[in-house]
Length: 377
Image 1 (cartoon, rainbow, N blue to C red):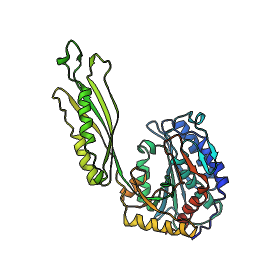
Image 2 (cartoon, rainbow, N blue to C red):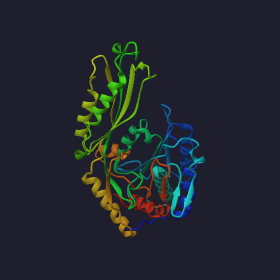
Image 3 (cartoon, one colour):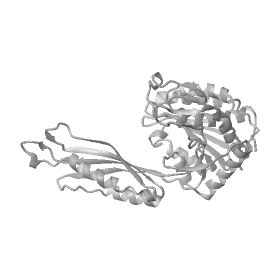
Image 4 (cartoon, one colour):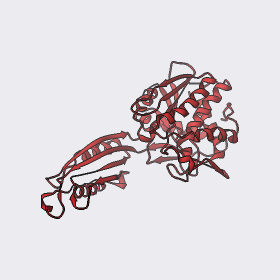
């Protein structure tokens, strides 16, 4: 099935996407992120989408919700984020540029291209008066790169009204695979209290928080189990003030990835239960599972097969992949809603200086999104 809606040429899409990339949107700058929210809202309002803008809180920018079609019944939800990991001023050293079929720029791959295509698809549906079989909700959020603390509830509420969820995070690999499963994520902070003393004159009176930290890091790292898909990273680490002072304080952060919720809960219990090796030290841990695992479900696979059939009709293959990185799709899949991820642009270099998209893929990838929006029922 080739969609009726025409998204225009990849060249024209790239010129509009350039404006998005050149609007810097670090998660930690709500004013900057709201600048792009303003642009997205204006375009949607111009073609008649029903807009709800939810004021930011806790130092984050606003959330934008756009709806088309009926207000009742199950919906298609398509959710993207506008924040990036790149700070203000990055464009000075990492400008938007085109090199052959690569378009470079901060956040272009993760995930301004995907969020732009979702926005552009909704704009085109309304402008060309193409009706979808199900009503559509577009979410554009400001805080995915730090775990979606202010948008998670909004995403989950939207998913509860959804028959399907589409996530235009970057396509996986050079082949542009869709993503049908992702690992869950746990995030924790470990703080260690020791006893300060002079490192020369009163060494035995001290209890080094840094030495205790080293033992704890080894204990936690040993929980990695590649055969079960469990990976654990301990970073950053900190502790100590001067070389002649036994450090009284130290700490580190933990990021774990797990394939199943059972493994995640077991890991969390072990991490929250960490005890000091040195009885003169104390260990405290705070944190939780941030995103549940996104399991490959029958509903998600059926949705993938529909997308693959649309891609085949348009002349390209759409393989699938499981990924270790998480997304907002973890939240929706965790609620049992059929979710298909990795619908964004082909490219590489997320969070890296060589970040880029293969810009000619803007056309077919946007048509794929349009094909799903038009045909899902």
